[in-house]
Length: 138
Image 1 (cartoon, rainbow, N blue to C red):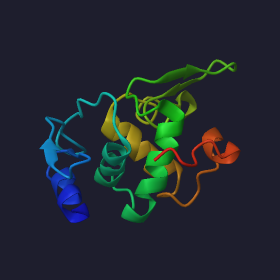
Image 2 (image 1 turned 180 degrees about the vertical axis):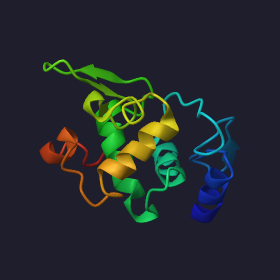
Image 3 (image 1 turned 90 degrees about the horizontal axis):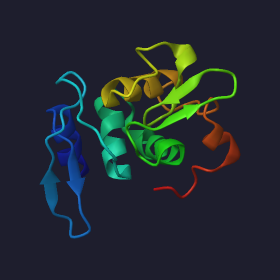
Image 4 (image 1 turned 90 degrees about the vertical axis):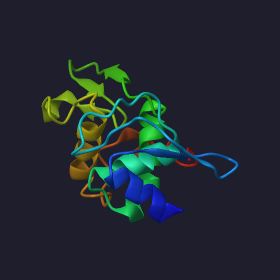
C-alpha cells in the first residue's frame, strides 16, 4: 500500500487511504507537476507531500507529526511572530528564509522543510519539536 501511495505522489496525485483502506484520488498535483491545490491535509497527505518534495520516506512520519503540530495540517496557516517575521504553511517556515521557502505553496513549503531539517535529521528549528508538542499528532 505504501508503495502505491509513494508512486501516486511521484506521478502527481496525492492519495487518501481511508479507514476502510479504500483509496480515493484527489485532484492535487505535487512537486514538479504544478502547484498543489492543498487545503487541509491529514497525516497521510502530509507524509506523501514530504516524500514528493524529496524527503526521506523514513522521516515522513515525523515530518507529518511536526506539520500537524505546527499548522494542524492547514495550508494557509500563518503565525505573526513578535519580532516582525511570519511563519507560513504546513511546516510554518519563517519569513527570514525568503519567499521561496516561507510560502503557502504546498510543494515549496515541503521542500523548505526537507532542506531546513536536513531531510529529517534535525528538527531543532521547530518549536513543536523542542517542546514535544508534535508527539502523538499522527
